[in-house]
Amino acid sequence: MEAIVSLNGGHARIALSGDFTFEAHRPFKDASQQVMANLDIASLEIDFDGVDYMDSAALGMLLLLRERLGQSPIRLTNTRGTVRAVLDVANFGRLFELD
Image 1 (spheres, rainbow, N blue to C red):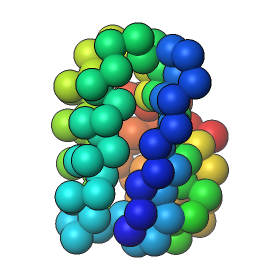
Image 2 (image 1 turned 90 degrees about the horizontal axis):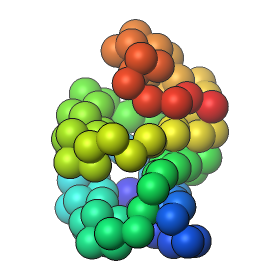
Image 3 (image 1 turned 180 degrees about the vertical axis):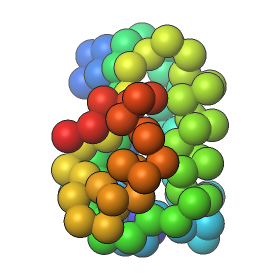
Image 4 (image 1 turned 45 degrees about the horizontal axis):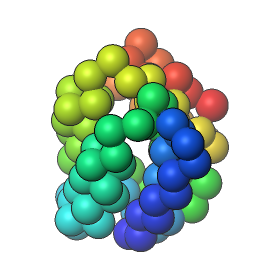
């Protein structure tokens, strides 16, 4: 998996591509740390446009990121198909904004 970070003022975006699984731990962690190092970030978007599959380890990574960012809102965009089904079953719509 690849995770590309872009920063624009107080908004950060992580664009994911490939399968979001346990093997993606390192690239996701690196991208997350890059976002958290910027103290001006008020919101985060994680773009799932290039992701067709995610597993429970990915859910755990998202939860850890949410915990570390505190009150900053996190929006999960371009969630569809299997990815959206996994997020819905896990009730992530209660924790994140889903598009």
